[in-house]
Length: 173
Image (tube, rainbow, N blue to C red; front, side):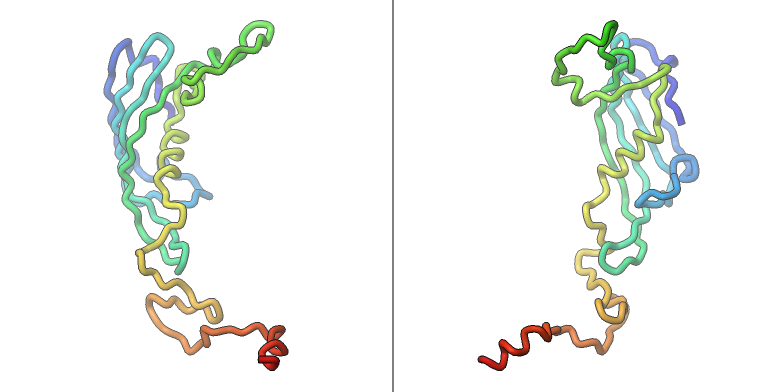
């Protein structure tokens, strides 16, 4: 999905759209999109520069980091991004070095008067994902010996393990 920047004129413009999960989702991601993605953008144009501020709302399905069961996570992310034309990022004629300004560090680039919305949304999803996704705060996880999900059942495995290499030291005591 491409956002065509030629449609937007100087000043502030509004863009809102609902994308179906199959329009945005890609195989191989750490998440699955389970609800339509609502995108609401304010696009500020200043000559060749664009500032895009907006929100993205949807629900993602993730696998729990402890019990490996799938669960849904609501996404309600806000962002504020700046874009410069790709030509402005190049060193220029003769590949003359130039000093990097503070604004350059926070800005993305666009090519052919288009911004890739797939990339923008994927970035926002990954920024809102927790470091260790958990289905709930008190998730008990899996038994390390038999693999039983401790949230739904229990097992007869011994949870205390002693290293047999340390047995001679116990006899000294």
